[in-house]
Image (tube, rainbow, N blue to C red; front, side, top):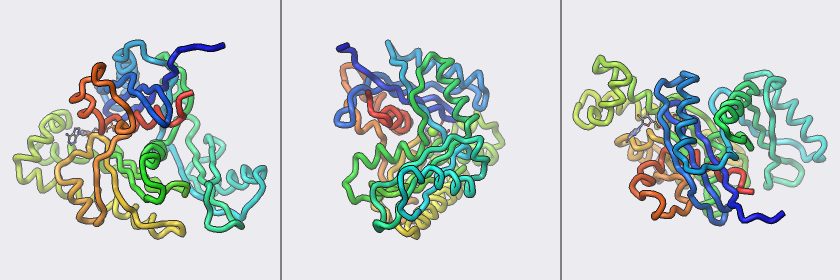
Length: 338
Ligand SMILES: Nc1ncnc2c1ncn2[C@@H]1O[C@H](COP(=O)(O)OP(=O)(O)OP(=O)(O)O)[C@@H](O)[C@H]1O
Ligand SMILES: [Mg+2]
């Protein structure tokens, strides 16, 4: 049967402070923005509040599509690379499962497991395999959340890997790049070169760490601290000094990840670091990271790969949301739009 219906895919990023939704049509050559929404989670860590925010993001989309890609990250996910002697396709699965069960922090029987043999390996007698395991209960609850909001879940990705995939598509073949998504609770770091095993790591220093530091210093609660965050950093030298320490700790973690990546067998110098996430705009963060690493640091959102019709979307709003919706947009690209 032939149809003129435009097939779209929704990327749904359920963050710790807000839900981001991006709906795209098109294909990797040309993606088009169909819908864009950000809904604040009124009571973080509260299941009903998360559900309400997902519904609110969905309802903000006129005639929104239902096919959705979600993601998991943090301690619920393990990403590793294995260097095997070259073996037949049918043997890889068992080898991966055995190796994986030895190195992950949770029971492999409780996990969904996936793997990819990388296209390039250092020589023809060996192979590099990327191994991903995610705790079943976490994936299932994400799928359940999406279904209960009327979505049709198509796949679940891993935050940093999905961001890297979108970022690498926009880079020259030989570039080694890092993406750093600074959210509220987590900073996700991904480093890779095309066709090589990526490195990823989640760090628990992010926007909330700044908020907590400010709250403690001023003796105010987190909600209040979140409200005055940027004002206090700009106007109160004691706050600026304390948040400067947070920045240095975060930068140190990113620097260490880069150093680790470089020390791997197939590691290489990182050419550029790209920042996204709501916390990435924190004053002096980008400059400090550039000074410490000696690597060029740039803001980047997957939304840059998307054509936006300015008759349908307000440019200022899209620009403002771009760092927040980078993951959601990358998720909407992750599967291609079939
Ligand atoms: N202009 C700004 N400058 C610095 N930080 C900001 C700015 N705007 C928002 N933030 C911070 O960004 C964070 C929220 O970003 P984001 O929406 O990316 O997080 P999240 O996806 O909900 O969290 P996570 O990814 O950790 O689950 C909050 O800590 C907020 O204080
Ligand atoms: Mg996030």
